[in-house]
Structures are given as structure tokens and as C-alpha cells.
Image (cartoon, rainbow, N blue to C red):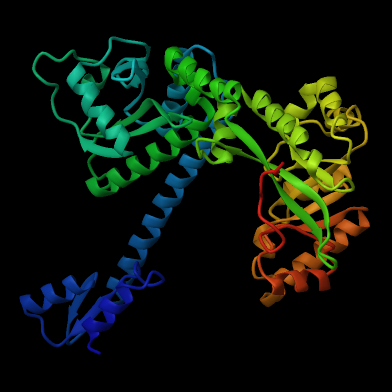
Length: 476
């Protein structure tokens, strides 16, 4: 290979794509220089090479790389801090108040010249909820955008995040703080509540002398607005939404419950040695095909988490009478729903006439373990299972604090465990940890016979997965 071929090959590899390359050659004509730069070289030296010049150029490239890394690290740290701060904000039921709080926080933390949140109103209109500019500070509300401008921004938002240069307003278009901020570049990203577009976050900036190049500024703005809009969708999406749109979405979700457009399915949990079902986990499927995690997430966003989870539990309990009499029934319930449900939930679970196991996932936050334990005791003879064991610290803390009957080994540890000594060692450690705490392990996601044999050898007593049975509705 020639030197140029080596550079081309290394540029194509992720681990070496960003290394600085300095080429040395006996030919210093213009075509050779262009060919070297086109191949991916950062710098060029013609022979004979003076050692002092070579060292100076190498040091210059190292200084550039170090400076750029510091810029990137600072930017990432700023974004992470802003995202964390947004996640901790208290949102109001008034969209303008929520937007004003978010805009103020972003303006303070990012130093942007312009920050704005637009609300999608009536499906095709955009109106500012709150804006910040260096000249005017924070302004709440404002007139709706001109229809042509609103259509352009909505079309972009439906396609995803974007950056664009800032020109002049259209003839006759109402001037807003955005046009007076003297920006040359703006980035925008959609804000969602569930699957609905409810708003647009915009961040603008202007070039500075000796500042980063325009492509770098575009990349920085785009990455920032994506991060901030993503967390805003989770934290404040429904609060930002037009009330009419929120009411329509909530009514759509309530209609699913009223029509009973969902049904339980049951997946066996077996003793790995005998393959006899010890219990069944009840899962929910929706008639319109929406994935359950998506639908339950929507319900939580619109304040219907308890309605959906309790409806799913009721359907699962009523449909479980055809299961083997000695098999337990495992149900998924969020801790906050369990704590707030009281005697009504206890009476419902009592009708199951079998052992009930409540699953608590790694992702479920328990604010007060004492309160949660008291709520579980009120349900009667109910057992606990901690889901996703081994996936993170929270699942281990749940095991320590709650003393569950079962701990479910996360699928990421089960998949391929028969050929992976590290997974085997971790599973063996968790099996020992669980047994010392008086609980038994259930391995999730078992799909191959070799995985089942390996798990049994490691002391895992129970298994769940396609090898033993898929989630199926109860027949008859």
C-alpha cells in the first residue's frame, strides 16, 4: 500500500478516523498536496524535512486536539447539567408558566441569545408560550405566528430536529423578539406528549469573532436542542400542550378502557428441572396493536396510570380462573399505583383465589420503602418479585429493602449465558445473593435449551421465556 492508501484505510476505521495525519513526501507540487489532503491528511511536509519543523507541526496538532477535546467536554458538561436541571423543574398546569420556567433555566445555563417555546394550538397554529432574548429578557405569551411561518415550522417539526440560517421576516410578517435578536443561526426540535406534537423548542445564536466555525456551531446547536426537547417531552410535554389537545388525548385513552379494547395474556414461569409451570405472569395486549409499554407510558403522561394498571389487573385476575390451581399469578404494578389503591386493590386480588405476586421493576422508583411495605401488607398474603435483577443498582436495593420472594434475572444476563463465563459468574453471584436474602431467582428471556441447562447448573430454579411458552390468552 502507498502512504495515501494507508491514510484512506485508517480514516475508514472508527478507532482511527479522527487521528491527525501528517504526510511526508519528496514531491511538493500542488497536485500532490491536493491528493494528500483529499485522502484525509491534516498536514503536509515536503522532503528534506527539518526535525524542528516536524516537531513543531506535531505539537501544533496536539494542541489543537487538546483544545477541541476541552471544548467538547465543556459543551457536554453544560448540556448534561441543563438536562438534569430541566428534569428537576416543577411544572405548572398553566402552559405559559411551565414554558417560562424552562426558558429561564435554559437561558441561564446555556448563554444562548434566544430561547423560545412555541405551542401547537388547534393543530395548525403556533403561538409563543415564552421567549428569551438578550434585548428583551423573558416574555410570556405573544401573538400567534403568521400562518405561512407556522406551516413551515410545523412541517419541519414533523420531520424532526433541524438547523437553519436566519434571514429576514416575510413582507408584512409580524416582528417578534426572535427577529430582533440578531441571530444568524437557529435550531429547532419538536416537543411531544405521547405521540402528539405539542410544541417546538427553538434556540438561536450569532457568530462571534474567533468563535467556532459555522458547521461546528450548527452541530452544537442541533445536539443541544435535541437533548433539551427530548427531556422536555418527558417532563413537561402534557403541561405545554394546548388544553384542547390534552383533553382529546385523554378522552381517546379513556375510550380504550370504556370499550375494553385490551385483554390479558399469560406466560408460564416453570421449574427449570421439571418444566412444570409454577406460575404465570399476566401481561396486557391492546386490540389496536399499540405496544403495551407505549400505551401505559401514554396513560401515565395523561394522568391515567392508575386507571390503566388497575383495569389490567382486574382483567388478568378475572381471566386467570382457568390457570392450574396451584400456580401463582404474577402482576405488574407501579409502586405509586399500589400505594394509592388501598382496600379496593386488596379486595380485587382476594378474588383470584391463588397466590399473587406483585412485580416491581428496576425502573420503578420507590420514594419511601416504609410506606411501600405498609401498603403491601394491607393487600394480605401477597408476595413480591423484583424484576430486572442485575440490570442496575436499583434492583439490588429493591431486593435488600423489600425482601422479595422472587428476583427475576434480567434477560441481558440470560441471553447467551451458556457460552459466556462472565455472565455465568454474575448469575452465580446473584443466585448466592438472592439465596442469602431468602428469595429465589427466575431467569427471564430463556429461548434455548443450552441456556436453560446452564442456568440450572448455576442454581437458578425457575425460568420464563419462549423456550417454555409464549404469552397466550386464556381459552375457554
